[in-house]
Image (cartoon, rainbow, N blue to C red; front, side, top):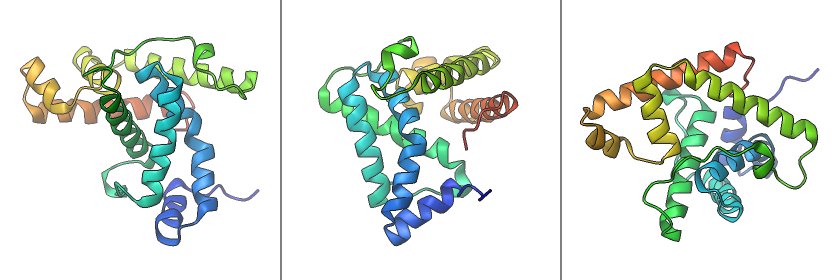
Length: 190
């Protein structure tokens, strides 16, 4: 059985060799995650689809280079997605912050998803929610504000009257805990 190519290797092929096949592999691996994440932030299919295109265009153009010493590729890609989504919302002048709306996965499904795909994403969503519930209350609140309401670390610091370094530390610890928790549940978010 051939070993699966790691995300970082695919990324390097994309930026160094302009390898469109490597970009397609990354796209196939992450398109549903990015769509789901963006749809949850915006509630709009059209914006979610635009964000997917924009994220992979940024990846192709090396708009925001990935640094492996700062974390996992998937975390960087979701941060890039989050920022791209917020930019799209600002362009649409919809909201200053986006309220996370909990939808049944069936509402966010792409038309060509199979029942197995829907079940897989629903299970992953449940695992993520379960893991978020295991965080300390202050970490849960900051994760919610940062990832689901779209607030910046600076605005969270200002609104909660908490030092910026503390906010950054809580997000970092929360992500580390979530990664361990998801790994324990069989999550494969590299």
